[in-house]
Length: 272
Image (cartoon, rainbow, N blue to C red; front, side):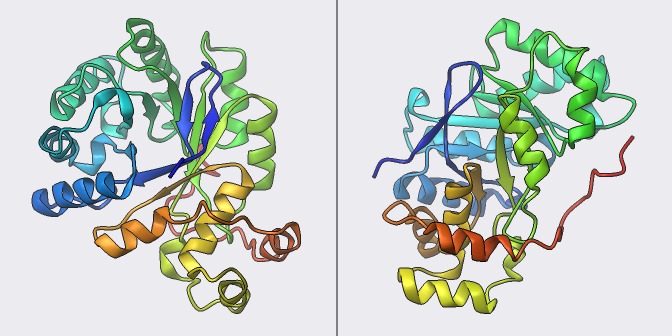
């Protein structure tokens, strides 16, 4: 199975689906799920300092004998480590936990008002060392990105935000595309709140796929990276089984009507 990739503004490529590690804090469960994801075909793993499991991910990948050159690893600087003096030491600690010399993508996890400007300078410095092959942001709105525009030496390659068929954020997606930023969608299944939605259930009959598969495929056809998570072998395998079909243009229009600007996580809209 060939997982499609999107080209980043650095020239690197990012797999269009990744295995998310949020809430996966049990050592055994985390390690087992990472190994199951590897077996299923995932090579893109999305982690963060605040997930408190980088050390488990590092151990699992080592134990599984995964080739580092075949992996795409993301971690994020947590809000508690975004101070000028904390960014680099916390990142070095993340590398130790992951048992890696570099990450493929390093993000600022949230646009913290007092800290994001200086923290981004630190990410630029890390990028210059080669220990982060690509740098980007998470939970940034158009306002936050515009603020960066005239104050950074390196433009973010990625903006990871909450996104699903009920939170499509078309203005943000258009802005990012116009400015060479790849959008990543976290919580693309909207916490399971849409699994009984009539429109989605109708499409399951047409495509012979489950509602989660339809929602993940929507991300692919929308042109964003989907980050999905599970600790169950069958669901992990199912989440990756979305590359043998594509949604028709008419069905993408149907799904566009589901957009309600509905969030299940933190909202950065009013962060100054």
